[in-house]
Image (cartoon, helix red, strand yellow):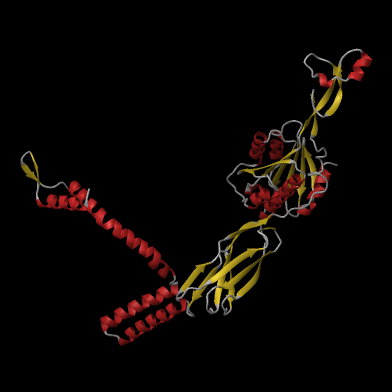
Length: 443
């Protein structure tokens, strides 16, 4: 429908009544509203779109530069001017003009566009707890004229670092080094680098972003383990079991030939000596597959440091298993953790947080047995509040023939070893004791 036809239809509707059965009636409000709405949409929508675009591009950035103190000064100027005009107070008018003059002076400080080329460089984007993360900010003046001193802000997590730029000539480069302390496991967002222009009274504050943010992963601390991954995975091909098989690696004994046996396993020397067919019998082996169930239920840990110790212990076990090219599965109440590489595993464990509304260690053990049925050794890494009865129930979920260990993390406790049925329970008080505790477990 064209604009002329829509306008004409509304004009006709407004100028004459409708007739139903020959009797004049008034226009129905709904019909009138629809016709007026169509006209308003045709005329108003394009204008409103242009106004909104113009406001977003020019007005919003300008208003964003006004600080809280700046809004107070503007409000005071308006109030003083109204009072001066209403009651004839010349002093109020002077105060309003002074406030307006301060805002004009502040505008002069933030006008202009800086021409910088800023490069944020972190030496390493992944460090361990306790290692300092070192980075640098290089700023180059790309404008054809000298620039006045300015300030750069670098957000680091919840904090903000401030760097002062001196007066810079064209093409001059200024570089600053910084160090980020890493006292806790976390993913720290570094950046973006932003330049700040402000007047001396901080009535206006203008920011310009120069770089993209970078994530710094502070991995949990790990410790090296002596010997194979836990001191007991000695066979590179797998662990033998008591189950017998007709085709495997570990030789067990000879037995009489049964129709259907693979003739490649016939032991011909014994067959020639005894006069009857004899075949080899093997012990079934299981490929080395370490499964770790890490509890992230905060109700099972006495202190936050105990939870961090549990994560470090799990990361140490996983890192050793990955270095020895063994299969690894790590499960938490939130689901499995990626273990394709050591980097993926540590990144995932850096993001872990404790919860108190998820299942306990017993539920986690049942989930582990369902998700990793072919594990050759199982670890339960839990807090000190897990009771022996809960550990016994967790061990009951482990399939027969699979070695099961529980590591109770309690900061400051003395290393200890105990047995609950077929489950070996290890008490860990310091991460540095992990290798010694594991050696005791297989002694």
